[in-house]
Length: 378
Image 1 (spheres, helix red, strand yellow):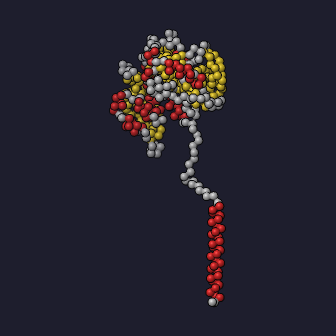
Image 2 (cartoon, one colour):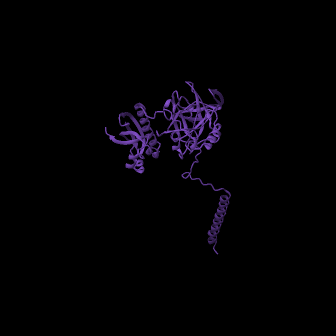
Image 3 (cartoon, one colour):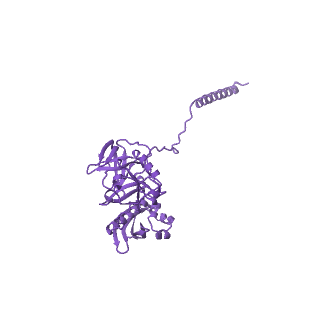
């Protein structure tokens, strides 16, 4: 055969043999190398921060924080407390209700009820009162163990000087403090930097991270920035015993000369508070709570679904120029204010609305009984 024919065949065989050898080497390399795939688009970062939004913690806690008004044979005083269980039991300080002839509890939604004493300490500054109308209402969350250390952030809620649902922020500035005030011993209590003043006593101390109650605010040193709170774990045994051993039939509701009528100035303050709380609930998107502030006539005319639809598009709300006017003879207060709002898909364009609320009593509870609004054009 001609050598010219053998040469191309030989070269082809050499090329094919080389290619096969190369593929074999590549295969061996691939099989010995771990397979690694990264999908940057589908990557999801695990959320490790368990702390709650501050505004949400405060709003949800305030629903179960109450203002306590007490009449004694000599004077009237105020304090705070918080709903502890579904029996309508409220924890407060013993010194708040000591010598009470009448006890009135005001909720965050301005509803007011008479309360009875379930139990009261003689050495521990702790007490429990009960409001039957609050049975089956979801109570505040209680911490089961004390995890707080110096430097941990806390929130103190209460009604200082009668201003309902006020909030103080601070830290745990000391632990295991012990002292005595009047007849009460305070053993191993928290020292806190949050301000505690008259009316704050009995209110809850909240863990900023979890939103749970960790203490009962008890005492403060005026103009010092130093206050004290009783750890919740120190009083839970007493609270449980009082609550479980006391039936409703045993309760005696103090009924002194307590006057439930509200003076015009106080009525206007309460009406302004109710309207502020209404818009606060809207801002936190708690539409059920806001809707519950409406009187029966307004709720009949407006379903909850329609009510929610009226406010769900608001991104922000700002209240301005609130004015109150007491209507003598009608036991009503008219509240006028301007609300500046920004809605979804409005390209941050502000809209001004003039609101007129009529606030009055319905079944002895303060309610929004009439509401009008109109857009203000420049």
